[in-house]
Length: 460
Ligand SMILES: *Cc1c(COP(=O)(O)O)cnc(C)c1O
Image (cartoon, rainbow, N blue to C red):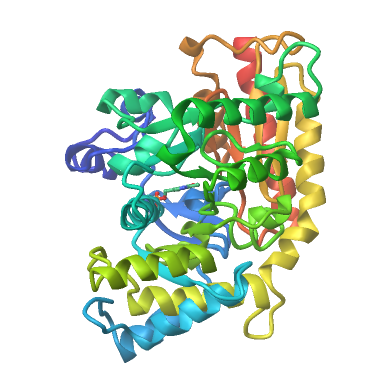
């Protein structure tokens, strides 16, 4: 029960804060969880209640909520040089260092990086880059963007148009020229009797038909998350990208990997593209880039797109685009530290990506165990991103009626147990921080199981 006295944190939150992506009936009923701090993978609310955050904040707080190396990097940089831009031929030393580092850890031996404040802006920026360089190269019609249904690429007008979610229709989106192909989710989209390979071949054929119908000269890019995140943690079949990419290459369409979630270790690899064994033409990064300690996004252009964009910019003497805080020195200093912490090991500690690989088998085993329940249709994931999807009927994969709000109830039952996890469609998402111990992993699964049993008892 929420504390609904007018001076409660819950009432004050509701009075003056506008909520995004929040189920308002739940807020009316349960109140807002107002948080004051965190320790490791736990967060604490204003009533002193502690929650294990199985979603790493919003996928991004992978080093936990109190990492001393990251806060120190921020403090040191605030003392040295607390803010600057990257316009008019100036940028901070930290920006130079981070770009070098990002190319070093990227699949590219050379390339260039452009900074934004978020993943949405990074996708928006990428689209403007492509529109600009195609126009410069005499192909002003080459503007359409291919993405997949359920793909999530952000919320600005362009990146929301790339996002393949039905809720964007309330905004009159997508904009024209944003095309959503079939979601590569074999369990849900595979046809009766269709093998996984036949399913992939059908999606490749759909891509070929789409290119033929629309015209390759009208398509600027194919943008995809290696493992879909906000679409419900959907790993494409292993052969998917290796079959899609040659078709795109044949038609001169760049393949862009939206690595905002997958990048920097979430799948147990540096990049989701690496997990699938393909090299994209550019990478979109955000979220883990600063381990959530600073808002920042980046477009990492491989050598070809980088050269073409450079030429287009030289032709009009500039790339007329940028954000006031692009390449912010504090953000860059934090990102440099985060990359060290996750990928290389910092201050005598092993790299967090080692721990991701160490605990992934226990994570997968926990998901598999939950999948044995009568009302769990599928458990899926890769590395430390996973989801369990609730169904009313396991054999027919029939979902529960939307009116039952099953995944919302599961997430609420988890909150009551001191576990934060997120409802997504009919699924519940787990993407714990990379610092999780074995005991915390056990705690996460046992609390989730208690919540699932409670809710399935009520609705099944
Ligand atoms: C979160 C996310 C975005 C958008 O990032 P914001 O920082 O929220 O704008 C884009 N792409 C993917 C894959 C994401 O998960």
